[in-house]
Length: 372
Image 1 (tube, rainbow, N blue to C red):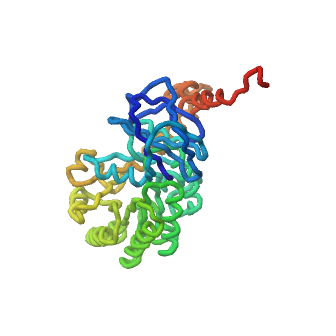
Image 2: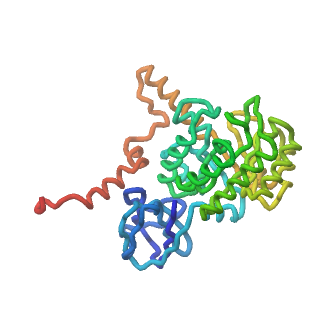
Image 3: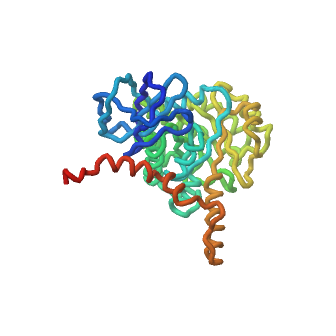
């Protein structure tokens, strides 16, 4: 997904491109508001352009833009990728929380809540799209398609879960290229054998050290050959499959191979998490707080930052609360009641899915009675 970074002296933009319609800017530029249109001069967005970025001196804002849309105004702009925005986040102070999404609407909600990035996780997508467990059943093509829908729905960077890369090193290279085309800012690759499964389940097996490192090297090569700056997350499941010592060796080897982020899954204690953060300290570490009870202790973002983590993933929060809410709603319906509890109003639902903005844009194309 290409992004146009557009800057201007105007302090109060109002209407920006969003997908195939306009919308008012929302969080993080929460204080930007106006009732006047924001336009651009004599520039056409081509088919590869799916986002534009507006920023003033205080508040940057990136929003998707319709391909082949004419834009007018006096602006300077440069091409910018989602990966560049993610790298900016990685270089910013503090630890960053990442709620995992599983479809377009969950990703939109993450963005509207003010989070700076989201993670298209295999567990949640496999459950939501197929109704099946995270056991290597969802295919490469299904993940790319789901990812493309997610990245086109939001402006924040999206991590893409690529499991084992879907084959050997040559498959890994193709997967990286297609994840770039799908608009992902980052790709997560792991060292499990195929078919893989959730890292917190029993019976995990990993490939050899050599093959694991080669996957990361292949991903780095694919990035370079594509002229991309996609962020590469190297994940190891060797703590469950082998030992902590093996996990630390792989973490160091992945960093040396060019990984941008290191992720060891299913660590069993705070001390193991501390030990990881001592390895290749210049490379950011990602912690996964598996909600509901996994192998890894649940620590607060403040605690994780003090240990040395840069990112904290919440892989199942949105999926879990969605399932529970649907179960409760079905019980209410079975008992003859409309599920009022936690139910948004119809107006709120319309706003969430974009009906209001759609109506505003639709009016632009309505024929005047005299012209019918």
